[in-house]
Image (cartoon, rainbow, N blue to C red; front, side, top):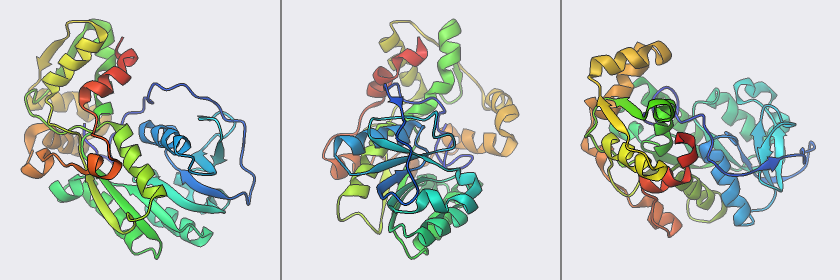
Length: 310
């Protein structure tokens, strides 16, 4: 699956396999936070909080609907709030200087307006590379609309447009665990899959270092990798011979449509291989150029998340 389908992207709901302790330091109204991270319990958000803590970025908050049960890195304030109820975000945003925002978690116009009214100065938005490569898709248009809201907000902004998330392959985990099999279409179509931690690394730089406001960055992994190769990498790290079963587009649509609807399923299949173009397969050097470290290959992501497939 690709970012840019459904909302900001059908990113995995399985978190990175990193140990955290429950957050007990609940933020009081009016306490200043240098940075507030939304989507804080997801793949990118958790990695970003870890990055920010490692670089001593100052007082940090992670937005969560249930602050008493949130598990964040030590020193991160659990901030109660729901982006789907933007009218009630004034308390969560008060005292925040910079905001990390994932597209698709709520009404961006209302969220951005609430942030502006609360005095937020800078927003880093995760959009999708499909804004460039497949602007005709409804999800890409939604991403572009969110970008436009932010660009016209009067706040400073940085926009990140990642390609396919490596973590999307977690949708294969149940069948790999049960019978060692992956069923998917377009087995030999390669895309420059990105490790969510690399998106987090770029976001950390944009949030904490000068020179990135007013910029839009397209993000990819270091090389194109096919689904067949991804399965081989997962098999290597779990020590099993996995079987790949190629599906036709029609078969794949039958599998996806009940969960996603016909329109989203069709868009996803286009991005997986049915309508791949040069823009989608081009490898960008943005991660290495901005962070000073090479982008992680898919094999690294597989190693980091091997337990999900065992």
